[in-house]
Length: 58
Image 1 (cartoon, rainbow, N blue to C red):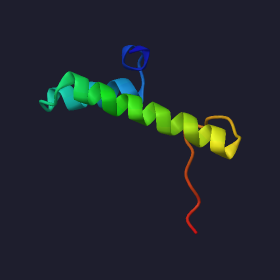
Image 2: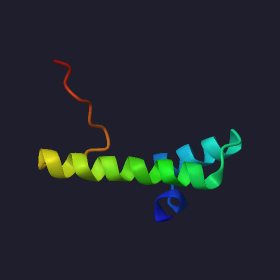
Image 3: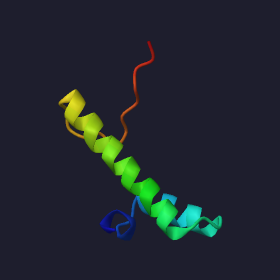
């Protein structure tokens, strides 16, 4: 809930999807999923979160 209350890309994503007519709980679950993926990625890589991270293409 705090991710959609604070200004940032997740709040913008939430508001954009709700204005498109998506169910609020559906969008909230998508935001939760995005957060979980980010946390798992940071733990897996063993690095700090970088907002501007661009994966290297093989």
